[in-house]
Image (cartoon, rainbow, N blue to C red):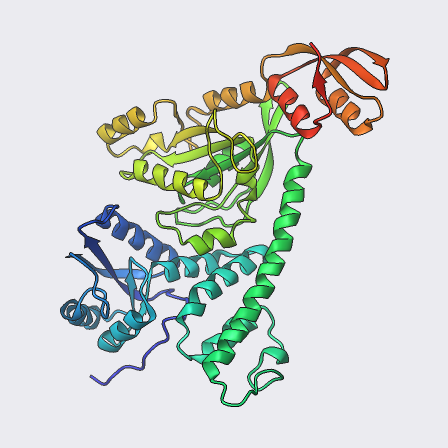
Length: 453
C-alpha cells in the first residue's frame, strides 16, 4: 500500500468521514474519561463523522512526542488501516509537534477536541455575528500552531474578505530576510484585531439591545447542549426555534415574549448550549451571544434528567456561568452588581432510563422542577413560579422622585397603579401599588427614586 498524501490537520471538516476516537485516562484525571469519550463520539456524530473505532488508554503521564506513546500510536495506525478511517480525533488538545508526529505514523488526518467543536460551530453558524465569532475562535486556536502551511492561511484570511494589503509580497511584507511564517503570523494578527473590533461593536450593540428591554422581566434558558432548551422555548412561547437531536443545534440567541397569564409576561431567550471542557477561547468569542445570560433577571437551567451524566452536565454549566461572571445566588451579586436568580428544570422526565439515577439527581437538586418540554408535564408549576417572580405580592408604597425627571415619572405611571400624587419642593410623591420586582427594577433603573413609606 503506497504512502497516502498527508492531509492538513487544520482543515476543519470531518463531514462524512470515518473517525477513530482516542482518549487518555490519567491517574489524576478529574473527569470520567469514558464518559468524556462518549461525549466526543456524540460530538463527532454531530459534525457528520461516522465513528468506526474507539481507543482509551490509561497512563501515568502523557508522552511529549506522541501523546499516547510510540507503541500505542503504531497500534492506532493499524486500527486506522483496518477500518479505512479518514480522521483520528483526540479527546484532548494536542501540541503542533504531537499532531505532526502522529500524522506521520498514521498517515491520516489528526484533529483534537477543540478543533472538532470549532468545526461544529463553523457548520452551524448562520448569522454574520456567529460567523465572525467562529472565525475569531478558529484563528486564535490556529495561530499558535502555524507551521508555515501558507495555503490554509489564505483560506482563513479570505473568510473575511482579504485584500491586497494582506497578500504575500504586498507593502510591508518585503523586508530583507523575512520568513514566510512571520508574514503569515502578521496576516493572522491583523485579521484577529479586525475581528475583535467588529465583535466588540456587536457586543456594545447587544448590551444596548438588552438594556432597552430593562423594564421587562428577562428570562434566559441555559444548559448543556441537547438538554431540550429549544424545545422548551417552542412549547412555552410558540416560537419556531430549530430543534434537532444533536449537539449545538442552536448557536444564535432568539428572544420571544412569554405570556404568563393575567396580563403578566416575560421575555424568554434561548442561548447556545455548553459541553464539558468547552474551549475558553470559544466562550470568549461568543461573549456577545451570551449577553442575554449575563443580564437576565432569571436563569432557567435546563438539565437532561434522562442522561446518566446529568449531574456532571449540571456542574459543567455552572462552571461556564461562573466564567461569564454569572453567580446564581440569592445572596451574592455578580461583577456587574446584578442579582441572578435561577430555577433548575429537570427536563425529559418522560424519557427516564434509570429511576435510581433520577432519584439521586432529585436528592442532589431538591428544589428543581421536573418537567417534560415535549409533553408539557410540569410546565404549569414552572409558569406559576415565574409569574410569582414577575408579579410579586402587590404592595402599596409612596415614591418620591424629581418632578422634572419625565422618564422616571413615566416609568412609574406605566409599571405601577398610581392612587395619588402631590408636588412639593421640586419633587413629586406618588402613592402606588406594585409588585416587589417592579419596585426593585424601577429603583435600579432610576436611582433618584426614593421609597418614602
